Each structure stands twice: as C-alpha cells, then as structure tokens.
Image (cartoon, rainbow, N blue to C red; front, side, top):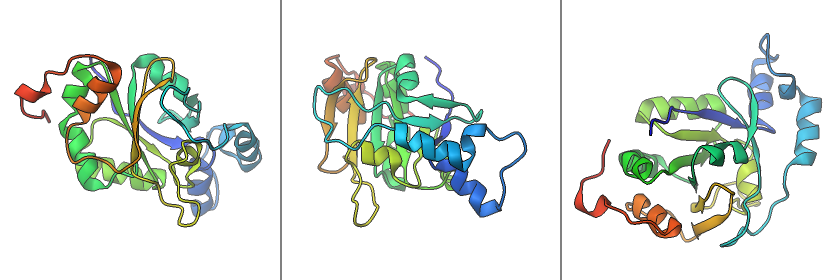
Length: 202
C-alpha cells in the first residue's frame, strides 16, 4: 500500500490563524477559511468527550493540503488509523521508523500536533516524516478526544486505534511508548504482527 504525505490543518482555526498573522487571506483561499464560516464550523464540531474503548470517535474536520475540508471519516475510509496526540520529535521519529510495519498491517499513522500549519510543515520536513500530520494549533481536535489540558492548552500524550467505522479498538492515555506502535496497532485490531522478527523500517 502506498500512502502519500498529508499535511492538514484543524478545520476550525488553522487557516484563519495563519491568515491573521499575514493580515489577509491569500487569493483563492477556501471560503471556509474566512472567520464567519470558521465560527459556524466551530458550532458544528463534535463536543469534547471522554472517548473510551468501543466508542465511535468524534468525526472532526480538518483542511487538507488542497484547501478542501474533510472529516475523520474520510481518513478512515482509506484504512484504519493510529491517531497520536502529544508526540515530541523523538516519538514522531519513532513512528516514522515503524511506518512501513504499520502500513503492512493496513494502518495509517496520524499525528496531531499543536503547532500552526507552517510550523507543522517545517517539522515534517526537518524530521523527514512520510505519514499524515494534522496541525491543531487551538486544540480543537485534541479537545474532542479529551486529550487537552484546559489549563495549559497542552495535549495529553495519548493514542487511539480507530477502525474503518471510527470505532475505538484500542487506546492509551498514560503517555506514548518509545517503541512498538505496530504491535499496539496489531493487538488493537486483533491481527498478527511480524515486526518482532525484523528491524523497524525507515
């Protein structure tokens, strides 16, 4: 399976935040990037909730690299996803090292970072990441998974394994492991993993 890199912004704030810093929207920007539409979208987002094992994950919205607005259901339509919050550079590199093993399982890794879209793009380039990264500068996505500290605005390091129907097949809220993401995904999906006998691919 060949999966191309996707950089995306959280639907509610990403494009507006960047536009505000520049002072105006770029020509041809999506009409959903304008503030009134943005505030309307905010009211349509699923509320924050304690997402538990077996639940249907909130169908959050995000903006893709082609400026089109999509939802989580569009991501899981391609393949089950391993959704990761609160990853630092080290964890992002580790997930990159296990990307091929995850893809062999038919799983797409997706990291949600608290940076603006431009900063997220820079991180992807600097770390040479080849998997999906969603920019969530205002914590819109993280809040929907109860993975955001309201006091500090920081993401809780956590992961969620979602199947093609957005059902949570596995999760972890006690931090992110330093290795074994393919094994986590395999266990959650109930499929065998062959990663124990080979080194992590890059």
